[in-house]
Image 1 (tube, rainbow, N blue to C red):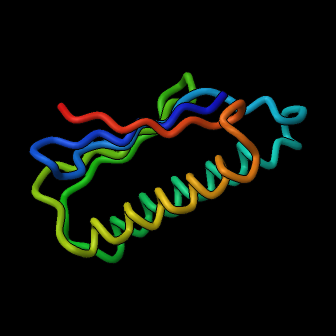
Image 2 (spheres, helix red, strand yellow):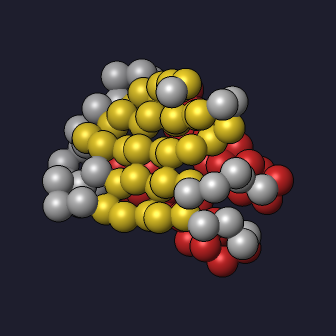
Length: 107
């Protein structure tokens, strides 16, 4: 299962963390993994290109991907993250919680 953590601090987005594998199909054929990867990579690229917010985006050797917001998120950043969440929740709703979970945490 792919696990997505949407982390907020003081009621503002602060971090998105994605890890795991959907195991919906064989490696290289897993459409859920591919869709989630595209959404997260596109969100990170969009945040870097279309906002002036300071972010750090990286993928670790174990496949975990993190997007860390280093400051108060702008309206543009909030919109892009809301769009990411909409896409992720759409995938989860279509294919089920067996393959993708989206959790929200306040720290």
